[in-house]
Image (tube, rainbow, N blue to C red):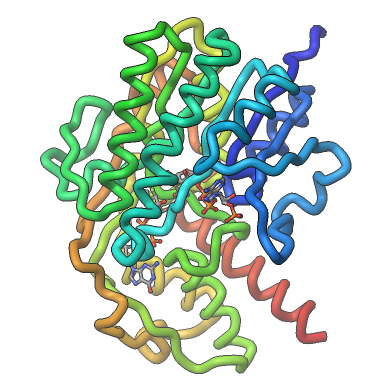
Length: 325
Ligand code: NAP
Ligand code: G4F
């Protein structure tokens, strides 16, 4: 079988970048990953792949750094996963969030236009764009009403992707992905914070965990299922936009109940609400309709909410036990 060639991933050190790199390497791609310079090593999620990847320094804030890599490595596919991706941080660093998460997309699209407009492009759009939702469930046609500087920045990234597709004929697709998690999720995001804390409490390493809004509802899926959808989008003859979701929603409270009860604990005994963790504006309810991804891409999620939460708790329990011994 002919080699699929080279794929470039921005944000390769992140949760999705690590799973997408695995998927593409398994499919025979040569994978070029961009990482930003840091004083400490950020390769924790890709350590097991290091000898199979080409890792290069570049930053979404620096267009020339991306042009250099595109010229030298001539990828056929580019996946833009890099972003300031934490909603809470976007309220205190709104300008940085805009520079990276919004304008960073234009810098990369321009870099592609200048080097090779036949490159296929994937943009990591977000259900956070729906914000204060105007319909349930949310589809590709649901209007946006963002509730955070992150949501606003992602809308810019989404529309500039659509605009470069329409203006210059780029094969540029946008995946509107709902929340997806895994044992590799950053510790600051709710499901990982709960999984890690439940495991630490079970092992007697901590007693309580402080959370914010317990009533928020999210459509939570499994990250490796979602990176498969990204790849499928770039294999289509025509570029397009797709909602990627499970079609089911659960509250923060339900997630806590599932994580703690898996370890024989009552979440009410350990969770405390800290008003400092409430957001200036909240997204109360997200639930996506993945019909288009199912019918056009043939995409199906393989891991459901209950298995996902148990998997994350088990992984943190195992890691903490290993670290302890
Ligand atoms: P993540 O774990 O936070 O990873 C973000 C990546 O972006 C990291 O590799 C980070 O590098 C990199 N990055 C940040 N600023 C950068 C810059 N200025 N230049 C270059 N790289 C930079 O996020 P994720 O969960 O994998 O999500 C991947 C993408 O999907 C993001 O765009 C996110 O906004 C979007 N998304 C995620 C979800 C979800 O539920 N996970 C849902 C919808 C959309 P460092 O390692 O150096 O920090
Ligand atoms: O896990 P979260 O921080 O994810 P959030 O804000 O939904 O954003 C994630 O999903 C988006 C897709 O919709 C991505 F675009 C984005 O990059 C990111 O991956 O919070 C989930 C919910 C929120 O309603 C939050 O208010 O949990 C609530 N929550 C309650 N207590 C908390 C906490 N969230 C965090 N992070 N920490 C808490 O202590």
